[in-house]
Length: 111
Image (cartoon, rainbow, N blue to C red; front, side, top):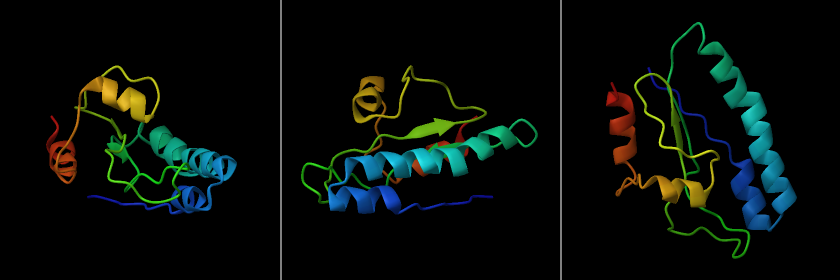
């Protein structure tokens, strides 16, 4: 089973050039969606992928084609050393999926 949750608020705040609103939207998503999923994983093993669908830098307020950071977590997924979900930390892991749709296949098939 696969569930996809799309949260538009961080993207909208990026288009509006509102950094505080973008940060708040990400923090609220973490609190309301990610934290409860991780808590339920103690009783129901699951895997989670967290990522934006595209970058919307505050500096341009427009979509860009830059790679996006992602977090993949759960059984069979090895840690890569990143401490935070940021572009710089994601790049430092050396893990990249090009084209990006290949991430889903590797995520679903992880041992």
